[in-house]
Amino acid sequence: MTTETTTSTLPQLKEIFDKLRQGSYITHEQGSLHSALAENYEAYRDYFEPLGLNLIRHPRDFFYLHKEEAENTPPSSSLAGIAVFSFILIEATANEGKPVEEYLLTERFSIAGLPHLQSDRYKAHLRAVEIEDETSLRKLVKRMVNYGWVEYFPDDTFRFLRPFHRVFDKCQEISLAAENETRGVLDGAPPEKKAIDPEMN
Image (cartoon, rainbow, N blue to C red; front, top):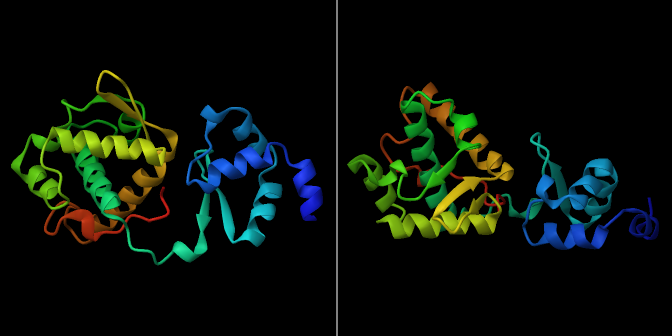
């Protein structure tokens, strides 16, 4: 497949490339962009590969670019905060006996109603990543909007979007590893020590 042929035959190539190279996800919400990728995934993947870009199709049916050279990039401070935020929400949901994945990925949450500031233990973990109060939590949630993981609403509520599965899956993986060591993820050192892939943006 030549570059000329690919450019002329792949639908909405420029729009797709512009969005993906900014670190955005393409989900069902993007309509025709998602349809074009879904119908021509292998062709787009082959087109991006010589550019050093790995087009990923997540099992939950959204798309993103992964840059191989970023494998060893240390996670940013914001990702550490998001990891702690996510572990707390997962643990609190499980402790309430709710189906974690279904609940987190279908519920609409209120910032004020989050469990994160309702126990000294959770507060201690949050302080380790410089989250001190409800205002800090809100800023973190809005940062996740920039990553394409969250939709934030004017009434100070939010919901997780499909690409949050990447974070959720990684947290589940780390949780299972911790269980194998007969401890919880939030036991001992704060979870910022447990890396979330820096390419999850």
